[in-house]
Length: 103
Image (cartoon, rainbow, N blue to C red):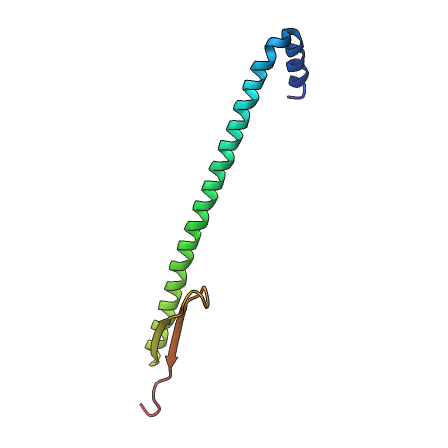
């Protein structure tokens, strides 16, 4: 690759003024390709972040359901409630009260 640049420059010098439009076209195509690759990478990154967010929400819901089931199986009365997202992003509330004494 290092020897390629001097060869290209020599060819441009030999061709003279006719080579500049061709080089401009090649550079333009390379820039377009780089922009396309950059936008494609950004789109893939956004999609991965969205998927991760969805899977995280599913996982956290499953963890809360498991906790509630374990508390119920231990005799606790379990209540769930949603908190507005404006207060907290983790908007689920899990309340459990112990079983009554003497049962």
